[in-house]
Amino acid sequence: MNRALQFLSFEVRGLQIAVYILAFSALLSSLLALFRDRIFAHTFGASATLDLYYAAFRIPDLIFVATAALVSVYILIPELSRRAPEAQRKYIDTILVGFSILSVSVSIIAALTAPFFLDLLFPQLNSASGELVLMTRIMLLQPIFLGLSNILAALTQVRMRYVLYALSPLLYNLGIILGVLLFYPLWGIVGLAVGVVLGAFLHFAIQIPTTYVDGFFHKIPRLTEPKVLLETVFISVPRSLALSMNQVSFLGLTALAALLTPGSIAVFMFAYNLQAVPLAIVGASYSVAAFPTLAASMVRGERDAFVSHIATAARHIFFWSLPATALIIVLRAHVVRVVLGSGAFDWTDTRLTAAALALLSVSLVCQGLTLLLVRGYYAAGRTFVPFFVALASAMGTVALGAFFIGFFHNEWFIEFGQDMLRVAGVPGSTVLTLAFAYSFVAIISSAILLLHFEHRFKGFLHRVWRSWAESILAACGGGAAAYIALVAVGPITFTSTTLSVLTRGFIGGVCGVLAAGFIYWLLGNREFAENATAIRDRLWRNRIAASPKIAVVASAEESNPASPQ
Image (cartoon, rainbow, N blue to C red; front, side):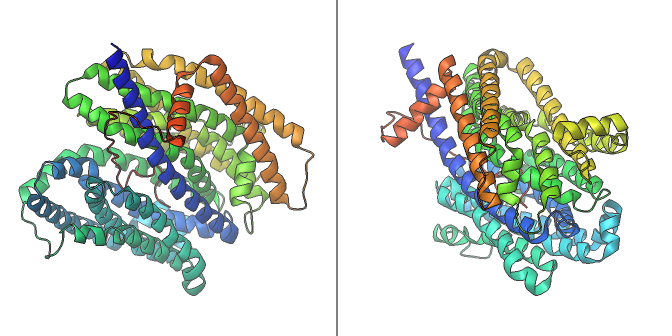
């Protein structure tokens, strides 16, 4: 019994080490993404220019997710692992050629039909100028480069080169930043699209040298195993369709936002990108790190261990995400003003983005739980359940968004919503209905997956309910402490408005974190003790004897739950 408990402790610590690796790389990427968004906000504000930019992403992103998921690392890594070096080269050559033919063909068709579909989806934006079509056509190079990068990422991760995995998204965002600072002054808004393509190319190119050194691509790749290619694609189809559904919902929400006040798309995307930071650091990191262990448990037929591992990851998602949600809601205006508030990004943009951020953050823990449960289904070989839930979620999100836009004209609904979010009298607040629709459906989808998972794999809820309850208490305490601190330090004012906002927000955040930590300690929270132990072990460099080897599996289309923008 003691040996079993000791092994489980090693597994938990091993999971946390993998999570810290992923979380650190996600943090670096997120910080650069926030810097990118600040440059956008400073230069353009929430304007029609950014509406065009974000709208131009929709078709390329949909194509990328649909095609790249067909050659995901979740499929490629197991295939590479059971092949000898020469067989690996033949397999990768086949996958590379097959993907290239598919992605180039789809991109060419999309480029030819772009005027029709963009006029159908964004009549207001597309009728103003031909820039949307041109930007979309340029960005159609992005799914090709990112898909190729996804294939090389499988080779990179098989050889445990996680530094390259961390650098790729950084270079992607660097290309976009160069698009704003360098190409936009030269070529106007089209230069932004060129920056996106440059970033995608850098995401791919950084992995080429090490791949070549490993003996790959010394000859022109050939399609030597067409049967294997078809088998790989067939296995990946359900997962590809499930991932595509998220882009379908984004496409629908963007089309709806284009019908509203100019700048509405930008407000929604700014808010979404902000809430995607904790989602990437917590939800995505735990779900990605847990996948190899989940898959291994199912292969060994250890059903109870499978449920235990996924419950462990879920408990830690609750532990971090619920207090983070409370702090984001309380400090939303401070977060938005510090990260985005400069230049053309005015107070109206701040209030709308902050309100949208609060609405999206309500579903933060549910989004993280969904990411985890979906990987649990993939590890168990049940790929159609996530697809059907994702399909219903995409349809529900767009339908609910359209309904709320029409219902928003109800006077009582307007006044209630504006008072709750403190945007009374702010023009363009209709866009908040889209954020509400996204969060509402995300919560419902997570609940459906949770109930089905409990039905299929008994015992999950029993293992997580206590952690969920303790995390809610910590979130309430942390949020209350942050709010009280804001009221107490409200009179503090510096010469710089940004410095004043940053100081108040920092003090409020620190008080909220300390209060949440104290409540966790007071309750004897298990996750608090596990994280404290893991951090202490890393700081004091204690070795974890017989710790299982951690395999971190992540792909380009999933390294960030938010579409790369």
